[in-house]
Length: 207
Length: 207
DNA sequence: GTCTATAAGTCGATAGAC
DNA sequence: GTCTATCGACTTATAGAC
Image 1 (cartoon, rainbow over the protein chains, first blue to last red):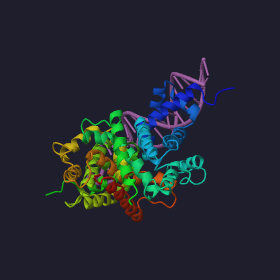
Image 2: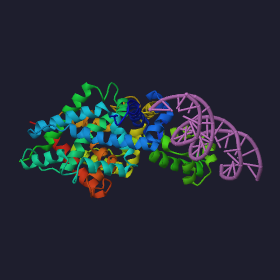
Image 3: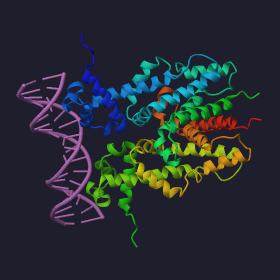
């Protein structure tokens, strides 16, 4: 039995991922991928036929990773306060671990609508809203009176935006604020605390 | 007296902006810029010498625009509640008006650190933190007891993140949530309301 | 200034030896 | 499978006529 992907094929994919995430679809060069992977350029075509196909392969995998990262940060069931606290912390760490992924997806998603549709179909069969565990948990919390009534979609945008923005805008913010390093553990912890505090207070039921 | 930029030079710049913002530095083609501007390709080199120089020119202008857009949305002095409400609404509209700008800056800023430094020097002489009017207004509001003590830097990240994310992630979110259109006036208004409500409640002094 | 024509270089892709 | 060598297409850039 042979493995579906050989050693070299795997290494090429790994490197291709790095290069595409850094330079984007157009900026990436087959030559660079080959060199970094320590193989000949012709081998890339042997395994993947064309740059187009190699890119598709990488893009699809990264979109899946993008959503999986999100899903993986959703904590086990508990009261909504700790749920929210843990989610913010988890997701911030996730994004800080690979800021390039978010940057890449947000840049490239514009040209690759069809691929996205396919991935979404596979990941959330049927209704992507109802099968989004974050959304479900928020609806639950509202029902149980743990937080005030809120549109879960907007809360979702808010939480993700507050986590994602400082990190992908890092190169910019780090020049605006000297001695700021957005991927430092110190900052991430601080950020998690601030985001959670704002959210939690902002979601309290008003009697 | 001749104008510094001729009619055609100006049109080339306009089009170059569009193409670079759509395709990025590497994806953009001089040929396409020439065609869209209705001039010959050689003219691009006559005016701007090289793609590199044309790109720099566009990039620098767009970074300035990026910050100016932010500055322009800062409302005149008033109580912090209406200040915040208006800022969120203004900035959301600003971003929704040219989502490509934010997407472009966040993607390209990574390779163009030096240009950014220069622009920041010109825009905020001296201290970019103290000269950021949003930050100043927040500090003031904390001092006056209008809101609870908060790190203004984090609040800045939160507000911008909540406004920017849904719009640049639009192509993705619009597939997750059918019948969502993130640049529709309807959605922007809804979003402004939700963001403000969350912020305002989250910033109340706790006695 | 603006064009045509073409040079010079880069990049994706393939043929063919091993 | 993996390499060398090279082709052919595309892209930036420039020379030169008008």
